Length: 402
Image (cartoon, rainbow, N blue to C red; front, top):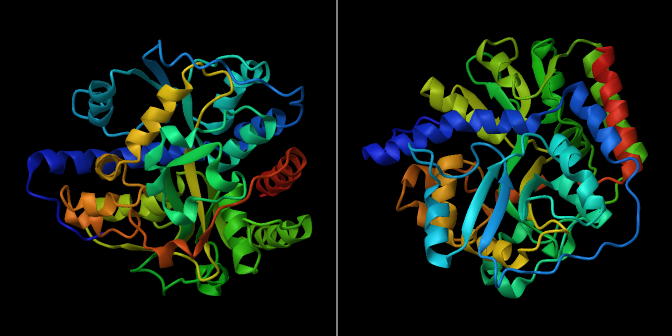
């Protein structure tokens, strides 16, 4: 976006660090590729066993907490400290061990899966994972129900995120940060692109990029076909979108299927339009110094993903974790985090609090979308183990054949 940085040098530094870090964060969230896909197929194929019993909560006598999260995903100062987390520890007396150990949904799950299956402590009392992985944990019984009495600030949760199909009523999870998958196009090199089908125009032949994240690329195609990806769509509906994807790959209309590296293709103009993540386009325009790329929510709808707090089945410090979640649902705290990470905060009131930090950030629709904007997006529903295997395999087969 073509917006000046604030004069305050501390705030200026905070925002510059946030924009630089954002690309790294989204690259790790992408984490796709053949290796990740193979791991995904293995990870969801054989989990079985009896019902697990949540660990006894020792929070009253143990004022510690282990929080596993992604890199570059919390406010950080120049000395590597986390200001909001330091304030939480001072206010509550709970000593938090912040673990930057989630670099990919599948690889993290692979490291803790055996312990989860036995109901054991995985060394993290709360973990932030993406919707579809949270769905898997819930299906397998690997999470503890949240005690909302310990999280009164849950009343600040954005209405559109309160009842996802994978966790009705948010009984097992609460969002940490969110973002969109939509379309971006080069405003200098091509006419406006407003729908996914516009990407298949003859003038864009061989100049289109899409994401290697199946849920986002196939998700926006399905939405244009009138399918509610948050509901009980069928295999036939998924395959109809997959057929479109296959056709555009095989014809050469789609030049590249990439993870976060799609931004490089936009910058060097190998691609002029792409299915993309909202936060990345904010970064690209910031680095360009003007709005060279336009991000739009496709006419058929965008995907909306969230990374979510959950409490593993074996955590013995459940109340401590809920106290932490409650703290981050304060609007002032959420705004401080959003100013650094530049993703969508799920906390109502954070936008108003952001005006005290940076009015331009408060008015950024990719950080603070209004209800009408959120209504244009859908969360890709959780898949069963069989669907996960079949859909990922079919998607990957097209990539391998390209």
